[in-house]
Image (cartoon, rainbow, N blue to C red; front, top):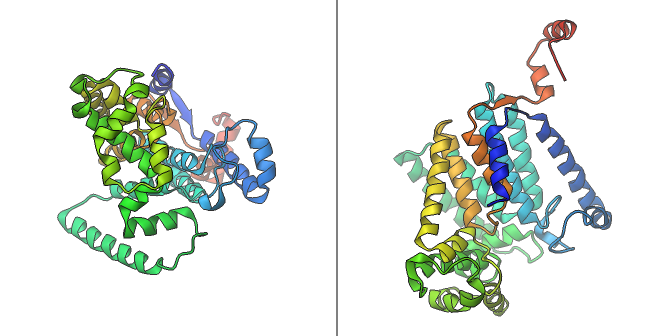
Amino acid sequence: MLYVFPIYLFAKNIQSLRMDVFTVSFTLILSVAILQAVSPSVYTALIGQIIRFKGAEFGGRGLSILAPEPTDMGFTLFYMFVLISVLAVKSTDGRPYAVMKIGCFSFALLTLSGSSLFAFFFVLLAWLNFSVKKFTYSIFVTLLVFVLLNWGMSAIPEEMPRPFVMLHSFIGNPLALIGSTSLGYRATHFWIGFSSIVTSDYLIIGSGIGSLRELGGELLAKSGILDFVPFTQYYDEAMQRSVRGAQLVSSAGQLMLEMGVIGLLAIIFLIHWHHSLGARESRYIARLVTISFLLFIFQSFPLSYPLPWFVLGILCNRNLRVVPPRRLFYSQLSTSQVKSKLLLGRIND
């Protein structure tokens, strides 16, 4: 928290933000993505000097670009989408940022990250202003799409991209999917933290910071999740080892394990705070930032992951002046207006 608090303060007190920084970011992301796709060996040699890869070969998992693995890059692009959406609402004209949001989604597709695609699905839900009719229609369409996907992907070969294989497994046997992928870590670690409030000897007060090494195995057995989810032998053994480590992969699970009910209340407060701050801008932003924070804290991202706290600071900032991207800003002016402003020296930088 000492790491993320300055990030939050910076975002809360910044006076202006030029959106050209995202243009630079997208250019860098695209350049590195092309490098990884064209020459993986050169990519590993160069980018490996500044990034600690979780695996040298990514196979059908997509491009990791500027992150240790595709999941990290995909979710970072999702949070860039959230941040741009918030800044667009704070700007006097949100139209220029549509291209940037499309860019975030397009680059996320290159990662083939199931987590990011799942997150962007919730972006759609946040955008929809549900009524009973819309909700019923959406449920019908979703079921129809699932049936068609299950029928169409029944012959998917193993070498197909991982998200498609996972989607097929999710439709056919979701518990088996959890038991044979990294989803098992996230679900198990969250459930350990949540159930520890009643299964731990320390009950509602939490077992204290740093207690996972001693109590992790015991709490895993008490949680009963190993009897419920059909873990493969590999993930069963990996789960036994992971809960005796330094921390859980679920930030929410970690807070509830170490701080008990206080940790649970802290999570509820943060979720409510995000929603309240987002509601000052619009209903859509309130839903979007709340969903984004939920996805962050319940997935395998540590509390020190900086983007959620930067978004929180931007939401708290009442004095922020958002400067549109330079090229898009100029395109809104006629040629005569640009010439006159240049002659008068009114366009700076």
